[in-house]
Image 1 (cartoon, rainbow, N blue to C red):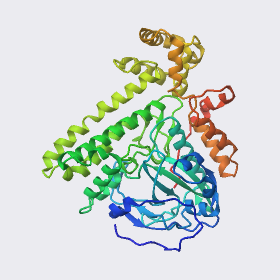
Image 2 (cartoon, rainbow, N blue to C red; image 1 turned 120 degrees about the vertical axis):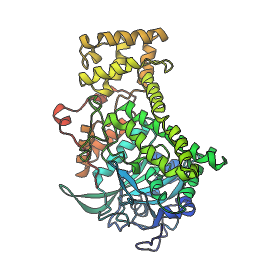
Image 3 (tube, rainbow, N blue to C red; image 1 turned 90 degrees about the vertical axis):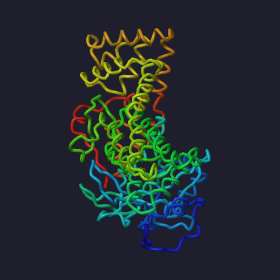
Image 4 (cartoon, rainbow, N blue to C red; image 1 turned 180 degrees about the vertical axis):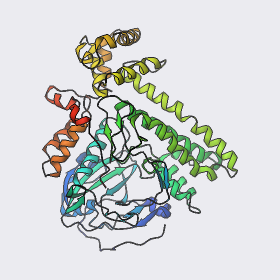
Length: 502
């Protein structure tokens, strides 16, 4: 895509060494526009992920310097960096928008992690770009800390996700509903920022879809690089279908509600991306919606698998001419793969539920899971607490689960479950310990996140730091952290909504 930099500033010489590579810009220049971040008057590192920095061969202390903060805010250009805004289209709430793009973000370049994997370093909130559509391109401390907290919590839960390297304050106030807020930039790390929306953009531009697909295959699914073209792109589609089926099953297993599952928020890598209006279930209810803009409940918790399938259909449409030059043949081939999404999702979800219930996933009793869902829904039981309580039940303590579901309602189900568990393993405390290794004691509870972000916006990070420490060890229950395991008070949950932060 053609474009020009907004302000080709001279790079500062005393910058941290990043060692950026720029393969996306070099190989597929049509999906990027050279751009520089907007000047930040006083960039300072508010929080830095030291372990992640070191895994990228970056020196945490150099990132904390004024020059390091300048680069991570987008304010100080680095001669190594690509510094581009990425173009993409997307279906937002089912409606196609032909040009979206990074309206407040920049891709600085690519790094290698300690496993040798190529990753992007991306800035969110670094100022207006050609894709801002009238927006100011800014972000605020609360929203950026929210993404930092929840993305790192998801990583600790072993769910594929973008990571957060740093939040940098900009030294300016950003006008949002409710008044001015302190500005901030999130430095985000991802396997890539290629989205279904990137392909929707490329498919509508002559000669761009194939180089983009070839780049994505080489980067994410290199086993397919040498396949003949009639097989390569179909295998690519199948790999993305599989990655996303696995991902959404993992979301469902921990009660995660993304909130804005547009096609531009569906990654090719199979990572969770963009945490604006997300939240976690307290009471189990498939109809749960947190996002203030999801008026029709399109992205409700229980709708997430179906929405993912719909998004993948849009992805398949972009690959039609690559799969086969005969449209009907391409449609038949892609549809056959897409039709496997439901079974793939159910297999992944069944396996996850088997682990959560202390069962083997071969021959998992679907009715047992369905009946548990009904019990939890009817009694508005807390999703996260329920599975820890079931483990306690195997250890001989019935009170935790009885406090969630009355014994007269749960007795039959509990007997069926315990019989199934006992038929496979006689050592029930050992089964309970295994359940605790996959069922978190702690998630980013909405009321705790809300309190931590409100305090952080006022300059107090104590609540945030404590909450981050807890959710980074989600499976390790400790007596001194009991308050972090409790669901929100009813008067909080009844009116709780999330916002995208723009």
